[in-house]
Length: 419
Image 1 (cartoon, one colour):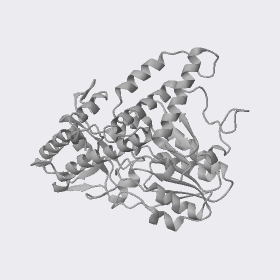
Image 2 (tube, rainbow, N blue to C red):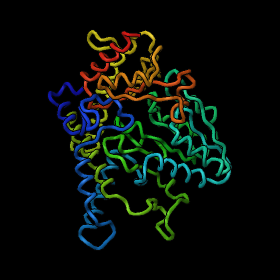
Image 3 (spheres, rainbow, N blue to C red):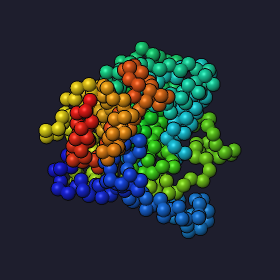
Image 4 (tube, one colour):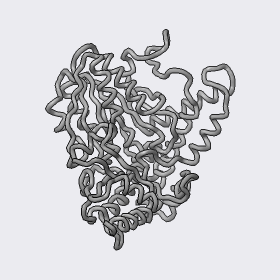
């Protein structure tokens, strides 16, 4: 996709820190984006600038007023990126912490009894929060099984458990282990048909970096991301909450406004760095659409990101030039299958005869950063049904190049040649 515009991919890579090397390993190819994407240079600069400012919001001085304006702009940028019809955005400690807060509020604010519905595909952030707070709210936590063949879950899997007593539901937008997306809008609509008052909360942490977010189309009550996985930095999480979820009893200060959710003074720099992310995507989208509307440029950026990443994962699976892809290598098991339209910038695989940690170690020696997912409390829900003790996760993003994929395939060819 990006190769239709000469020099664009180089411009993209020039906007990120540590694209080709880092201070610890030196030169390396970064295929560990699902663990945390590369950071925009502008985010690094903005973080340093705001970290030096001693003032806080809500004071009667010029600096405080300026900080409040930065936050107001960031909230508008979030509106452009997520495209909700109403509701509010809040910043918290992390994506996991915010999932716990939203799920806890829904479980405890909907009365005693009923059920909390989720799936076995979900990350432990949402599964753990439901397991913790469903019993406290007198509710039963039900997990519908995902499909190990596709690495995803659909409405048909949820359907047998959907009923009017489902008070809270959770949906994972994209799996950080299989890399497969979920049709959030269809599942949410199916739940609402039987339980219109259900509070539906989505874990969008893995999905956000791959674009194409549209809360207006989803019909949910909460959506959470971790900005460090979407080109920003560590140290904060970001959530959107609907007006009806915001109105439930929740942790807040005495006599505070009834829909206030943020606790304590917020880091203005966190808000400002997310504005940098939105500004970058706006810039990227402007190369693919002539529009005066920022939202349309953001949508165009998401489509271009998805198309470029699809090209990269196709090469990884099917090969490039005379280099065989993962699908051609004997003894390779690919999570979610080879031909899967749900894939978003990630390929996880296991290699017969060589444990995943050793594959990752050998790739790292060759200068290619990947990651092992083990059948532990993070990933056993995905790997156990497949009979796999571990897998290699190769996660890429739109700033990765076809040449980097070829380097990966070369290294894997050398590793498997000796098996």
